[in-house]
Image (cartoon, rainbow, N blue to C red; front, top):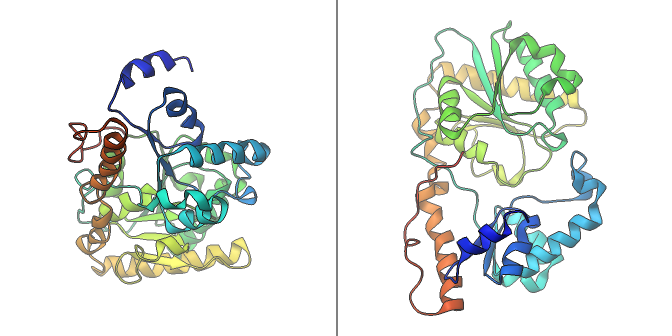
Length: 320
């Protein structure tokens, strides 16, 4: 609200459209009377939102979600499950919804050979440490790998949260490297020095970290979610493990799968290039033209004439 005047000046008379990554911002194009594209990242259920304000203010969140979905002129869902959720909760808005994942910058994240000469397995997680990510399972998995690999494992965390708030972290603190906040180029460099990405989430949209890991030619080890199936392929790009009855059982299964993957990697299987090929359909070049086409259409419908100049080709991202 403090910058509303500046935003109004930037929007000008048009043609212009807004792209919204959060429901909370939907009021901006509404009060400025501009068309908007809403990108929906999360499948929110109250039971899944135990680590955020969504759980405490569920009715307020749902009201904001309803306003954003109904107000948006076009909706992009990052996976099919989210589109199915819109079909169930907002059937009248389904016609303006499409499925398109987040995009990965394949110029920044590119395949490189991995170095396993010192025998130390380096595992990376980049992102928030909140309840939906199941950090406890992540840390227990690393602890079990330390036993299986006789201490030959490092855990690299890229993010600003404090893992110490989870009791399971104490067992792996000595083998953890905390990188803090890093921009995309720095994350790419960390992945280039590492071997495997790790995801243990209870639910996700489609994590950009997954795409960045694969585009870097590094396999991913993850608790299985249906949207991961096309990307994490056994023998090619990593391992998917079903969540089991207890955290200890899931951690054991994850550690076993990662140990087998590490053996294959040290034998030259799979290859960074084959892994990276699975991320190419999700690249900036492949996907952003669709997103820009939606903006051009909305602007032409509102203002008429030729679409706005400068949106005919994807622009390389510069933000982290």
